[in-house]
Figure 1 (cartoon, rainbow, N blue to C red):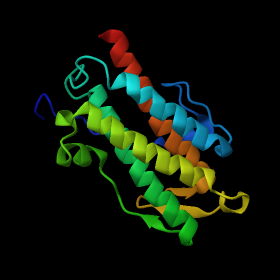
Figure 2 (figure 1 turned 90 degrees about the horizontal axis):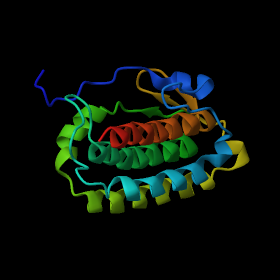
Figure 3 (figure 1 turned 90 degrees about the vertical axis):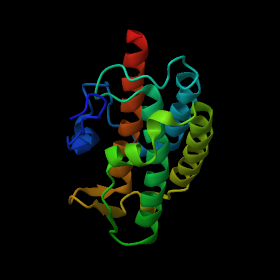
Length: 178
């Protein structure tokens, strides 16, 4: 593996839905809070993307803050599409999404931070509105990931927010070390 290649994360993170995450101190929360947590997370990236050396990787095989931000931008978009499918269709199956391949194909490392921020904020606004419009009777609608992981909109929201907040934690660790 070349020194600058990212080491794929093959961990099944679905455990965070019920157990939380000791790495980033995430705890499951009432899914009704999803929209407000998206808004808070999106605000964080204004400062993170303004940091000097935002595109520098802290170590071989570890994404830079810019790359994490690109990933979050894309996660906002992907999860909005998946949420829409869960609302519109009965038990849709989600295609596999290879985040590491997306980082290569979209050249995360060389994107412009100001453009990433605009896109991230736009995507955050879209998915925050989508989660805000989920009705009481829709929280238990379901969907399946291609690996067979079963989600309700409620568990999907918790899983999704963990991904975003965990990456904020990752960036914070990097900024503390720089």
